[in-house]
Image 1 (cartoon, helix red, strand yellow):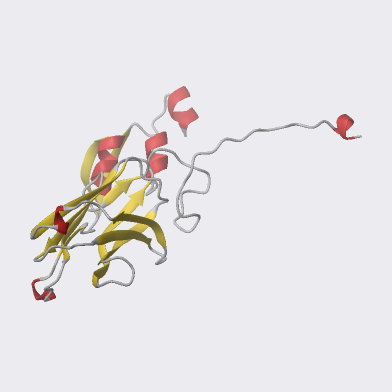
Image 2: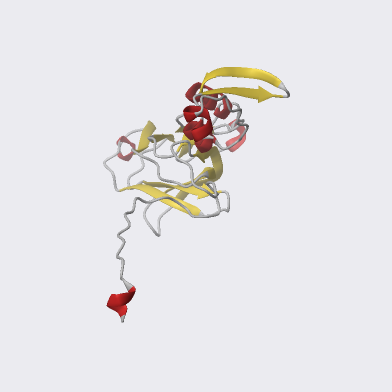
Length: 218
């Protein structure tokens, strides 16, 4: 496609749900929905429009009938790169938590896991033994966890949270299945495509090749 369109000067129409391939092979794009054009522009603009048409609700708010009297999560939010809970691979990710406590938490421990679509925890981030205002004050504490360049593989994810005292102490609350979001890759493509079941996350690597001639072996 690249050779035909750029070297021969011909227009090629490429239809795909593969955003990495779209980003690599095209300069302009259109988004179709039920046979109608809903967006048109540069490839970057078309991809952003396509990704924003999801339905993920990446914000959690404690339900009114929760009945919690002890420390609990009042609100949580996954701040993704694109609307509707769509996060681009390799880009920063921010997760915010608003903790409510009507009494001081003398030895509060908070942590959360990111769970993939196969119900496997792939990240565990924790804030243990921090000098939080929650230790000596009533009200709310806001915690923000920042990932400078998220390396999770593509797929669908959600959060599981834990709020308690140190091991052996009181367990205040554990919440699961909140703040769903999706990780996509648009930065590059591979021959077999990005697949959620291939791995949990990506790492940078380098190959070194050593050639041994048949004469040297003999």
